[in-house]
Length: 261
Image (cartoon, rainbow, N blue to C red; front, side, top):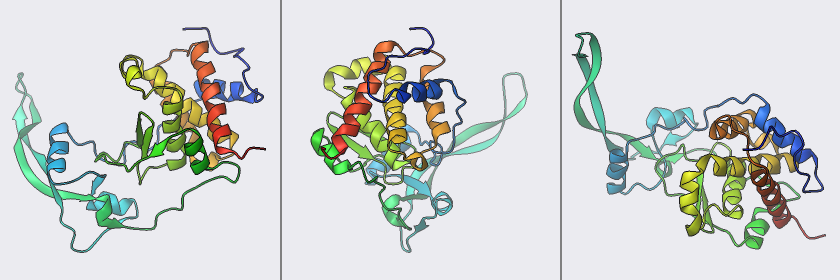
């Protein structure tokens, strides 16, 4: 890894990007509730939900209500295997709570079984999602995961955004970033698994710089984004080559969505 980013490469006509990136790496971050609004169900329960035809975010009645969404009258709750907790003793004879077994519990409702006011899709005057996706040959597909904490995902030249993502506009740039940075090609999958921290830094840093450039600061939580970046880097400093890729990807995505002058 290179030394602390003090004199980063100036690759664009926007030298303040270097200062913004340095701030993202060094300023305090704070994880909010974006990645904890939904319960992370086990793989077994995900399979059980899939067998019930579920391919979208699920939540309990109370959790949907907390997100200002009301379960529709007549909706049928989906089942999961819930642990039965009881008193037990550890190997030293100390009392503790232990899993005594599991029971089938009908307690989850899908997003499509709820209703509520959806926020209008945000788009700044100077940048168009449709224009950018067209120029970059990227296709947006329906989100088909049960874990509502996953904000979005991308594969090949396709991306999907969670319809109840906390910050959909930022997530859009994060996933476009993955594609433009070359993280989603079949040849790059093994490298992504090995160097996931660097790849997530690059995608989130691209989103961080892009939203700052578009003056869309109200479309994401900057402190949470910094925390996300820092958590994936685990105290390491990104190499200059990685920083260059972030600057180039940011520039390419912004230009793709702007009208030609």
